[in-house]
Length: 486
Image 1 (tube, helix red, strand yellow):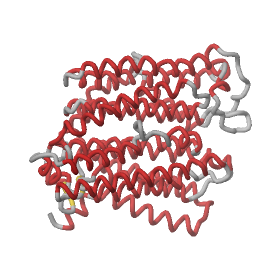
Image 2: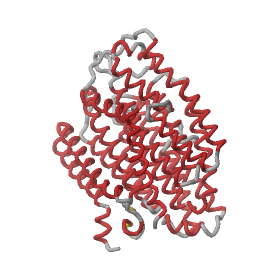
Image 3: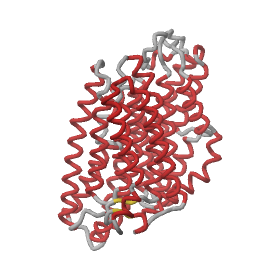
Image 4: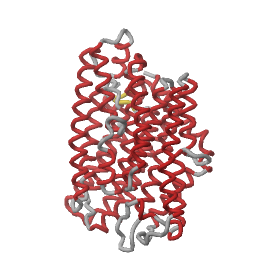
């Protein structure tokens, strides 16, 4: 494949790179006064690359025809599925960020540019078919994310969150690099296809350690137990729009990357990584459920909720079947929308001065003060808990069905039992909103942009979402089919 063909396949990454560099110049000359303009341009760039990703997904593109740079990059339907979720999370972040930061008087023009470059890195991550490409994309995303976490310099919690994320993220990168070096040393290649072929002839002990370290490094990025310790602190300390970003786009990218590595690179030794994923799934479900019970901050509660939901997504991968992977992708899409709604609602929890209200106790009597907002939060809490008829139930259902069909009935039983525990802390939030006396803390105006995002998201997670089960399932199957080609 010649260079021009390869450059054509990475067109979306070229668009994001070009926009990012151009907007960087605009920000340098225009200063923070150009922040709104840069934000609008960034959203338009994300919309453009999202449109570019649609044909690949709809046409189920896969194999050598979509492989670029001698097998280091693949613009296939699997990558397109993940990229649409990434661009959605990034665009929503840019929609809600300006008003939040302008209230604090610190909205900087580089914020949307950092989000754009983070999205570029995540796009490279999900298209990576080589360990080196994987690492380049991962670090491009991570370097932007560290700065985003510490963006609110007037808040000590934000600086602390950025520092913790940086230190622990650097450690995870080192673990990942060590795993990549071991994998290369015992398979003779960094290309996913070549690793798959090499491992089909046997699994050396060194390669097994390589698999363990690679999966450990990636587990940090999805905040799976036991690599979850950064999540509650970073979710609480980072500015809420940044937390919205962390809960959506990077989560989707890291989960998609983990799936591609397990299936495309280590797929010939499924039993080697299956046990690791099973353990991480069960631990994440249990620790996420139990850890959330004692939380008094809504953002920390949602952080443990994300750990819990990552566990359910990992169950589909742990099944070791393509049906299980498709179930994970369906769950991932639903989870991204639920996260958008939950943090969109959190952004609307403000006092009369426009300051953020995060204490769960301060949500007391919200149903009497802001019944629409309380209803939206109740919907998302029930949906995250997987209670029918809300659409969050469907995500859990398809994953558990795949696990049962794969013959892992005890695994599904433990997951279902743990989901009952998780329902407790979601119901606690609803109880505070509907049955406690009004706290008098929440009285700020709800912005039209935030309201629109929450309303649209609520329509998706409502029973109307079941109308999308067929199309969403077909798109997931189309994405998964790309993993078995070339």
